[in-house]
Length: 477
Ligand code: UDP
Image (cartoon, rainbow, N blue to C red; front, side, top):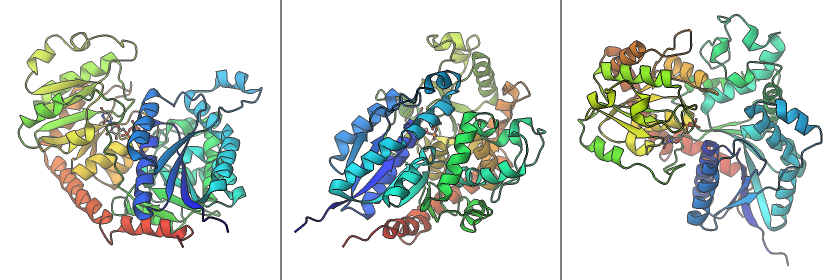
């Protein structure tokens, strides 16, 4: 008599720290609905520039704490084709990371086969950077779902890319800067709102995204870290299949907001910022933090500092050194005696702050963010209105959505040279903290905080979507 195999759900995140964290949180959520299953996380060991020490640290801390319910499997090193070394030297970072994940498909195949020997693999859940695993799962007859860590806006434009490719003859970067791009469920965009990785058709990253988009259309589901009430237009467009004209949109599962309570990245988290916040008046502090990778040139730091000083507002600012001055101390980065003048009213923290705790502190009243999706959701859940200052990847698109669709943020605008002036910083910060426009985004954000809570509670849209997802896999007998 054969033993009944243990149920397993296999997760395959891209090795970017933010993506790994979101995927593991999704794993925990799945476990809460299907406690009998084991979660197996495939970790790419492609020599990817995206795989950082922070990812490795995070994985070891989860392995240590989650016991046997979540386990990690490092895929073998990718065998690179001989042509790759010449190709590699010409590829920008994102294209290289995508290419390496793409080459990992055979490793994913073997990992799934070997897990299947002892497990009943219910489903494979992949990051959208790992779309080459869709055909692999299809071949093995395993349901494959794609997890979008960057919200419904990330998904609408990604699914619509092949259609835009067919109907626009040029690279987005060569279009008129005012050219209107109309993506279903998305406010009207201009080329510079799109992720920089899709601007150039000649870029390998563009080709891989195009191929990935087509692969994702064949997936069995799209799981999105958002909730319907936050992104009603995008959600409707997706459910109605508007983003894949002539193709298919996989069934949509909006299961968010999914937020990690893990202190990612750095164990030497500075608790001083929370103590300092304890001494500030209610909702009086503007928090500035730009994700795990955000850095600015010295010139920009200076403008920010002057703008913050002139705004007269209290601020807590996570500062990283400019890339070309990794070792300079604070004093040398800022204008003369500025630190002294803002002492008591402003606090600068080096490199990392416990963001979720900070946003939920009663003294914080506003958040200047780079629009990384995790940061956006964390702010919504804390009911803190934002100023959107995108830096890279899909962040310009998120800004457009946050400002025009969700109305939970004001926009920080750069001048033509790409620098945000001190005057702009001063004006926007004041506007957020002390104006009718600021009041309106604050009210909308608070309403979304309540909507998020409702979506996650019993009978709420996200809770129902998750049940629907887990039930779509073979039922536990
Ligand atoms: N984060 C933090 N402290 C910092 C900077 C970032 O705790 O000083 C956390 C933040 O709370 C969020 C994540 O790191 O959970 C960043 O993810 P996001 O998607 O916002 O941006 P990314 O780093 O992926 O660009």
